[in-house]
Image 1: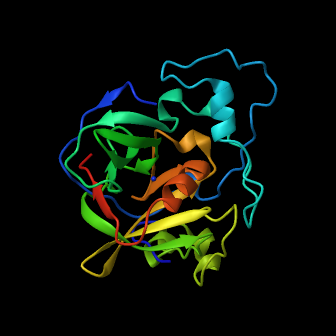
Image 2: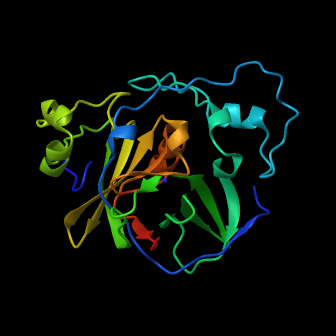
Length: 236
């Protein structure tokens, strides 16, 4: 894949905002996907976050995924702000169920569920100067996709030139376990929603435009997102 510029519980109410869009791939900080470990038996089952999910529940939601082609390690949830844990929220929208809405200003990705609710995922987004907004749709999907750095990234980061013909899928691949490629009018926009195993990137501007979800969240979104799904990326 080539990418310009360098390289998814009721109670809380989130306001829907006007449509917008996204761009590019990872910068050096997130180029190599770091493996993460779980919290282990730290006796935290009684600790409840302000968002309503206990750390014990988070360890389960973001636990290891051993049956994948490349087994995915557990997320160290202590490195993720609890507000970015996956959850169901109130979200008023006129969009059809299944629609994906990316809110880069707040580092969230929503999947509209209908009846005023959405599934909300924490995300990382593009750095200043790499933000894109607009309407698109999922033109194709890939599991453990190949990543190809574009010429622009190779010029900025010569060390990635060895992947000019493509980096095979795997845990070290910047696109991770899943990717949703955004299209407009039959053409690939160069923007992608991808999977990351680096919990410290969530809630940060670290990419050259792409939107990253924790691997467990990305698999959850990917499995519920068919090709042709509408995607709205809001202005930052």
